[in-house]
Image (tube, rainbow, N blue to C red):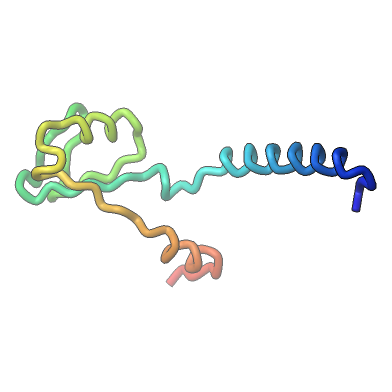
Length: 98
């Protein structure tokens, strides 16, 4: 144990955990920044500067994501598609490029 004194050990652990959490927050999985939206009713709908292509819009720009989610058709005809990263991460970790 690095510290015999209990209070010093707690301070060390707090600093370590705070730094670790800060490093984890800085790591952003690139898949988390990407959002996919589907609009089956209007396959070529234009929202701001972005346009759906064949009913899908894939974007990593935060401004576009806000515009899409504030659109009046959001929730009626425009829906987000969720990526399940728990299924994707084992493939990335194993290096499966197939």
